[in-house]
Amino acid sequence: MTAAVEARALDALRWDEHGLMPVIAQDAASGAVLMFAWMNREALAETLQSGQAVYWSRSRARLWRKGEESGHTQKVLEIRTDCDNDVLLLKIEQRGGIACHTGRQSCFFQRYQPGVGWQADAPVLKNPEEIYDRH
Image (tube, rainbow, N blue to C red; front, side, top):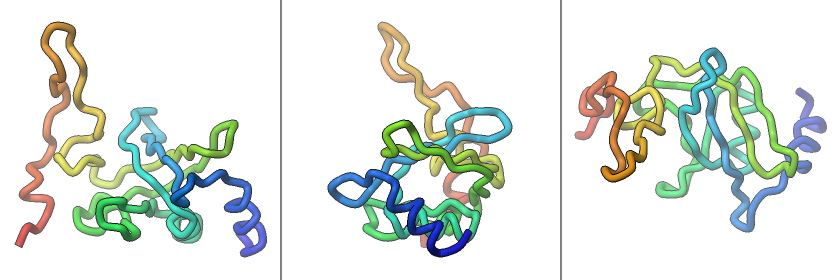
């Protein structure tokens, strides 16, 4: 992608008042929604250039290269925007099969059960203490 095409593509998007855009990461093979995150212009530009998902971490106030600590990177196969150009959908290949910091495949592992509340309905694939170096 040329720099001019990339700049026009980024300009066509509707960033919020903080310069951010919501992003949904979806497993390209299964269709499962794996996670929700945010991107700013710089994160999307790096994602376009590298082919790896890069997000904006609001809690850290910096770019977050998915998998930089866990090794569970996301290869971006396709990027789509919605009809208002204010939400992105990344169709990705999740390396290691784990997208969530809890060690699960997806961040959307809690289901509401009437009369019970929120219940986890997906297994932990790997203990987070084994994924992240907490030292």
